[in-house]
Image (cartoon, rainbow, N blue to C red; front, side, top):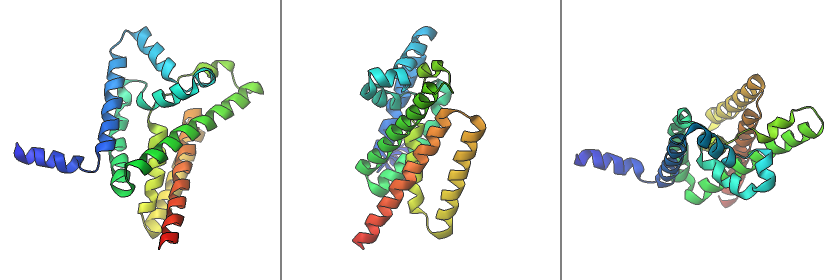
Length: 205
């Protein structure tokens, strides 16, 4: 038992941000999923960063949407989340990890919302998209993964950057959903912060 506890403590060391975030998302998602179906749907919709909510309560939904997954099936994403946030926290610290994730979540959301609003205004997209649910941790995760490419060196970094970009772009083209376009934007934001971090590191050396 002592050995198990030691392993847990070693794993948790330097990953408290990742584990706390995953725990909150897990609890919130389970509580919402246990409600009657119509209540679950309403709670997810109320937490969504769709255009209607961004116009009425932008700050509230930008924060709330980052702690909700649309269904219990979506909780699988907590596994890569704990790994990525944990790796970032142990490398650059809690503050930098939160900033990168927040930038990815917020700016990818705003970018998607801007494209949706433009498409609807030009009558190229249906107006019902204003109320489509959009919640989850994936934008922040994509940005953190982009940041982590800076930990790689030489050819491995180039392969990660090119491979990740191609994969995200291809998936967005195939799925043709604005959510997957948001993943591509968030990944790009993470890569951008990695370049800034690299420039700062070079200036400090």
